Structure formats: structure tokens, C-alpha cells
Amino acid sequence: MKRALFFIVLLGVAVSPVMAQKAQDRAKVPPKQYRLAEFYEYSGSISSDGRYLAYIALDMGVSEDHLFVLDLQTKKRRQLTHGEGQGVDEVIMAPDGRQIAYEWFNEDGSHELRIIGVDGSGPRVLYHDPDIRRITPLDWSPSGKHILGALWRKDGTYQIVFFLVADGSVRVLKTYDRLPQFAWEGRMRVSPDGRYIAYDLLAQGSPQRDIWILSIEEGRELPVVENPANDLLLDWTPDGKGILFASDRRGTLDAWLIEIAEGK
Image 1 (cartoon, helix red, strand yellow):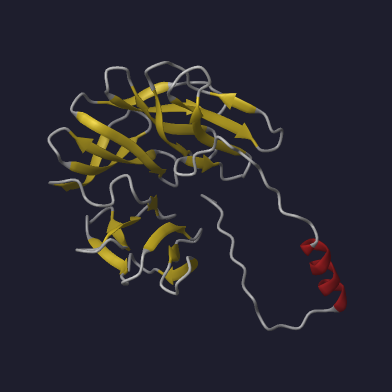
Image 2 (image 1 turned 60 degrees about the vertical axis):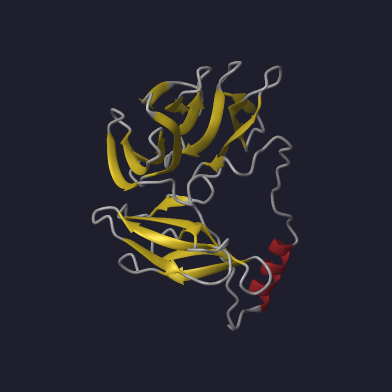
């Protein structure tokens, strides 16, 4: 399973007294909570098995943000990157929970896509281009062979791309002449079958966001959630048959689910 999504569904079914008692006993057990004062909620990633949390925090003694991993079982924290005048902007965990892709900025202002093991092993630069202003890892393909990313070039163009993890080669999925309104503000997620990309972006002439799907093979974009409200992508369901999103269309920010078939 690429990542876990949990839904609470209330059904009108009959249950035995024993089952009811077991449910009450489970309800008395408080959920696990972890307090991370330094955790930046806009850039963190948890492994599919729920053991590791990769996140960005301020490195003590320097003014830059760096990459940390917290083992949620042992409560031990490991700092994976260091350096003054250089640091980390975005992080995303691989499907197998063994590697982390992250955006690295250098002292000269250039940016790179890098990969490192959860245990700090095997750090390497996957992609570097002096013509790139920003490079952001957004998600991994289900197979773990590709990283979905966004390139903001110095000429003003913006590209949605796949990086091949084996050698860093790039496959351009979509190019925009100017920076679209979803860049670095919303979320992008690859479908579990690896055929589509879901993301949210600002509606035309509106401060609210809608949700779109991009076909990886065809390059076709289709809106799947259009509403005057603000709709924010959360993720695909594990079977790829739906998209979970947040919406304030009822006056409160609630979780919604829409069914998806063949990218529609």
C-alpha cells in the first residue's frame, strides 16, 4: 500500500453484545500522539508503515532548515543534512520507506534534487541544472522508480516532470509558459496505478482552489472538483478509485470523497 487513508463509516448494522463491548474497550484507548514543536507541517512525510517521519527543522547553531528523521517507535531523532548557508526546502518519503527525496539549496543560490537513505546512507545528487530556479519533489511513483517533481526555470517556464531514480534523467509531462497558480502552494499526488496525477490549483479569476487530474500518457488535464468553495487535494484512496479532499463548502473545513474512473 502506497500510503494509508482512514475513513470512519457509520452503518446501521446489528452487532452482538460482545462486539459492542470490545468496541467500547477500544474507544477508551487514547490515540498515539507525538508532539513535535519543530515540525513544519507544510513539508513532512511519513513512511508507508508508519514508523518514520521525515521533516524539516531548524538546525541548531545555523540559520538554515535541514532534514531530520524521527523513529516513531524508538522516539529517536536523526539529523541527515548539515551546513551553513545551505539547507532543505521540501521532502518526500519513498514508497518503501527506505529513501527520502529532498530539495537542496546551495550557498550560491542554486537548487538540486537529492536522495538519502532514512539511516543517512547513500546520499547523492539526482538532478542539478544551473538554469533551474526551483526544483521541488512532490511525490514518488508507486513503483519507487520515478519521482514526481516541479521545475521552475529561469526563463519563467514551469514544468511537471518525472525523474528516473536510477540515473536522474528527466521526462517532461507538462510545460507551462508561465508559473501556474498551483506551483508550490498545493499538492500533487500520483495515482496508485501510476497513470494520473491529481493536484489543486486556483480557479480562473478566483482565490479558491479546484482539483484537476493530469493523464501522464496523454498529457490531458481535466477538472474533477469544481465548486465556488475552496477545495484542497489530500490524496488518492489506496485503490485509486477515489480522491480525498478538504472543502469549506459547508462553512467548515470537512473531508470529502469523490469517485474516480479512468481519470474522470
